[in-house]
Image 1 (tube, rainbow, N blue to C red):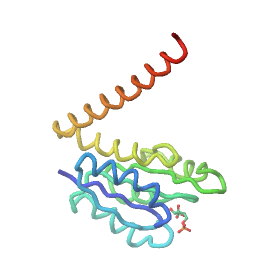
Image 2 (cartoon, rainbow, N blue to C red):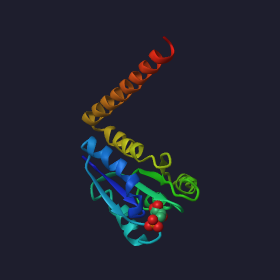
Image 3 (cartoon, rainbow, N blue to C red):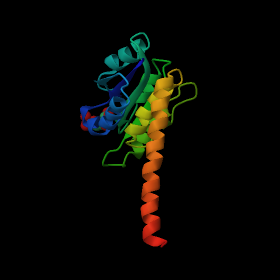
Image 4 (cartoon, protein in one colour):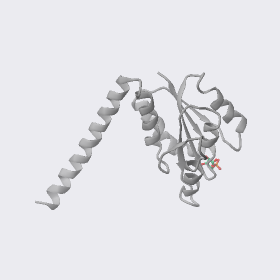
Length: 164
Ligand code: RP5
């Protein structure tokens, strides 16, 4: 199976990124985690993206806050799919990172999830791998089913409380 690369701009992003790590673990999808910054360690960030395909990666998740150029910098140096996680910060609540991540120029796509949406970033990466992996697709189906059952159980509780 291809690996997922998880890159974060700072170790301060880890509490958010852990949601992606835990989701990949749940699905038993192999991954690597690195701290590379588009601004502070641009050489290492570029090197990772340039070599990611030949190093066995299938997609890259890039998490960054503030002037969040990391996902775009990854995309500039690979044709693997890049998923951006805009990480929230205290000043603008993550709107700065959201716009920096999502507003890519034409020809250079970054699939951007919600602010701090790390679990969805992992799920999207897994869905990409599942295009050619039926066992992984079955796991995704099972996860959707259990998610629906959880919501229906909550619905039943609320219906009983208010509609009796
Ligand atoms: C970004 O700046 C990082 O992704 C992080 O979200 C933010 C703040 O970094 P630190 O100052 O906490 O290292 O590059």
